[in-house]
Image (tube, rainbow, N blue to C red; front, side, top):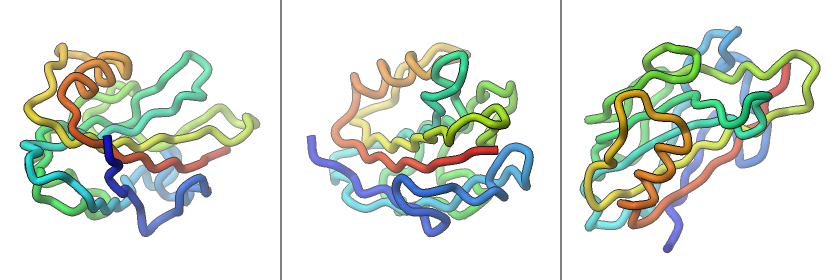
Amino acid sequence: MAAIELRSPAFTDHSPIPGRHGHAGENVSPSLEWVGVPAEATELLLLCEDPDAPGGHFLHWLVTGVDAHSAGVAEQRKPVGGREWRNDFGEVGWGGPAPPPGDEPHRFVFRLYALSGPAALPDDPTVEDVYRAADAAAIERGTLVGLFRR
């Protein structure tokens, strides 16, 4: 499976995410850009999760139904055509990084999946549910990792 190039003007891969994107900051989603989405993709799925959270994978952002012909999303916006889901803060949309104070930097993993059809998700999906559904319909994917600490 070839990779989609996923990047952000706000931070580079495996570098710190600016504090304004944090849940205790301005809590605005970062702008993202992508290239390499295959022509046969019917939609995109975007998620951001913290695999280093004390309780396991913490879902910060889930957007399904994103226009497969889009090339990114502006800061504090919903991707074109996308449906934002409830995150693990219990909020719909972006929920910025909020690792426990004093922890080593947590990884915030942004994943973009190019799908052959809609992902079959339950009403209140966990990160694991999203991975199962996305992997079942994925043609290609891209990953960007940001770091955050408080």
